[in-house]
Amino acid sequence: MAKQSAAEAQANPMRNIQRIDKGHHTWRVVMRRMHQHLRQHFTDSVYGGKDLALAAAVAWRDQKEAELSGVDYVIWQREWMRDHNKSGTVGVYRNINTKKRGDRIVQQAQWMAYWKNTNGKRSVRSFNVSKYGEEGAKQLAIQARQDGMADVARQLQSGATTAATTTTTPIPATGESAP
Image (cartoon, rainbow, N blue to C red; front, side, top):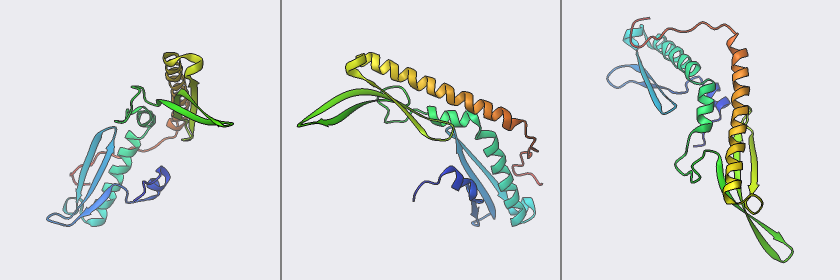
């Protein structure tokens, strides 16, 4: 099954919510943010019925998404070191660029830096090893990645500041207490 885009996930009203009818009749919300697993149950008997328990589950999920899906989460996603990283720096890798020039094939080593801008578009900068040297090209790629991510963070922060001026009513944490 293909991974949903953020827009598709937001359009799904039952995302992260499951119905359990074995033993207790409950709605379960399961989410993961920044390596943290969040789980909460909303039992029909506690909330006064299936529909009220579902409404509480949706409200809790939406509140947690609002709390944990802001600028910090976006930056964390882009700075998370994956297991297959070999350079030791997120978004920086060594690449061998192969080109055909006439009858011969030329290979050029380069260090690449990439990051996603605020719209999710990938930005890339490359630094040729033959021009800058192995370590020089790597350091330039690391610096380009840091500069690019600093720009993204500034843009996200300025966008969050304007979004924070919109007033929203927080939903109280409900847990298993009666509504």
